[in-house]
Length: 376
Image (cartoon, rainbow, N blue to C red; front, side, top):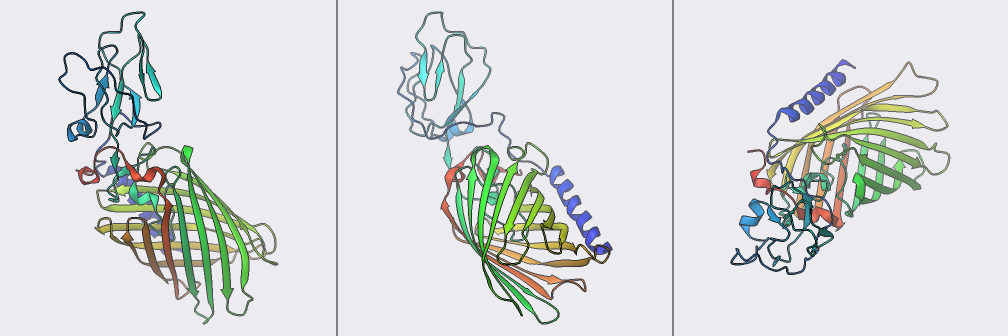
């Protein structure tokens, strides 16, 4: 019992180290709002020789301000979104015709708008993408045992799972899951699972179904460790009791190549033996070849009791390596063989996940500086 809890404390200390690590680039003007709109060509300021090309490197390094009536033209189809920026520029004279920009109108007396050109994502794991300004590694599952944050809005991911559990008594359990994940606005995520389970001495279950929802409390890095709330309900076939599960998900970057996540979970059956499971799962990984290959370590502690045996829990603690390979930007393969370290643990439990970005949503659009500048 002491060893798993001590290792859990190590996990918490990793989270604290994440707070102390260099945060890298931080854009003082968070980009929010619609993307991909093209503005009309506006008259040039007489003092300017040419319109501002927002896709140029110079425009990407700074912010272009548009003033009324002394404004510049928009000549680039790369126009993205706008945010308010206080400015001491002279105000437009009363009665002048407002300047119409995409989705917004500058009327006399209003502050000018600041625009930033979007950049296509390079796929590097710590590059910030989408309106949540989240790193790329959070938009695809990195740890089979440990969740992290939410998908980007309108991203759709499909995954196929195999989980094998090889117990000390020689029996085995195999689970096969098909999952579809939906990233939603407002930092929500909805997941649907269909599960097949076969176990030594038991009939194969074909109709297990799980529904999972997540909500991140804030955009990435606005709250330390990026807390995310998780709820799941399991509809199981036959006489198997249904169950609900709640989790607290924590995750963060450590430096420019490390990823870390920690989950605390509590699960309870709604009938039958009313089993209760609680514990934690944790993963840390390093981008060996960013973004193609990452390697790391995962661990999981689980304490299980039944209604008539609350004082005699089963304790499983597993530890082992994990690897993620990206054969292409939209595919990922995760493998995590974990080994049991307590008497109640299985000899080995292994996860294999193959995932595909069916629709990348806003995860295809980078924000802020390129990932190569983060953590410097």
